[in-house]
Length: 414
Image 1 (spheres, helix red, strand yellow):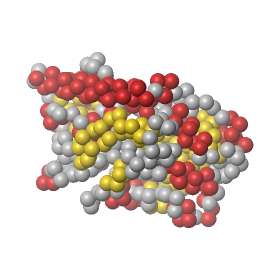
Image 2: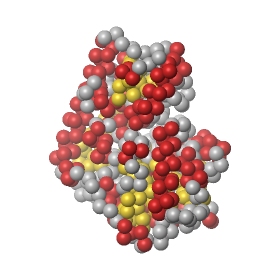
Image 3: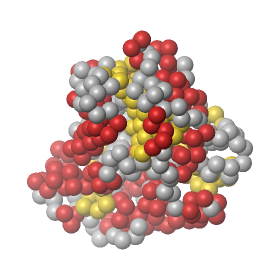
């Protein structure tokens, strides 16, 4: 990957205002998927991640854009092999079909950031006509093997012309953890509105919920790849401004969602569905600028708890490993001073065995390596999949008492 360039901005990504106030900063942070070979250790991209709140619309965001074209072309992350993720994708597709398009065949679904095609495969099984738009060439190939057609590229306001004629009017546009990567959400929302069926089209977006990020101290979700962080309230404000009405925040029950999931179902204001509008339920504290000033100390306390847990475990002579090489694992470790005390980072589907995790530089290994090199404790970063991880590793001789959830550690309860 060529060296990324950083461009600073000075306007709110959501409303265009200039009254921005920094409330967090993370020093020298890497990309989440920029694993390096041992001989290239230390050459990976790292830069500060300051986070701001807009004093006009209260949208949390970064104020720097990183050129990520080459990075996403080689992107490989996927949760398709997870049983929990598969259930979630199936429920999302089935619930959307049964609630909004009962009995209708051939509903046109475009997923932007479609990855390996697993979510579109779930829609296809309900009788939908599907198309993906994905920047990673490798993931496009995986999707094609599943019978999911994809257009390779980064979707922007100019991408509409690249869509085939039968997808110039679309029933559902779907984004899963892609919308919060967009540097310019306003023109993107305008493009989607032009594509959606004006009578009953739906824009379905799954993003990380800022309310949960702060309440759980999940600082690992502040990434270079993410541009904005929404609550139900700020999503409501943004979407209303851009010509949409939000009609659903509860498409999939909380217990069936992935770890940090805010699901937004919106429709053009011209749509017959707009009369189903719902109100946001964000706590009032998120409207107080003073609350954001306190957030930095709360997150610093969580990092201190994690460092203390690592120090205590290793001082007792325990071998400690991490589990989960997605963004949670990589970014959590990048902010921890003593991350090097962990033995290695395990993943069910590592990008490539033998690589080093960016910045923390611990070895990236697979489950077979963990079986051959047992540890005393496993810190689970991908806590939403804890039950699956335990089920897979207990046959290797591990006990439930050896697994520690990242959330519990950040809260200081371990």
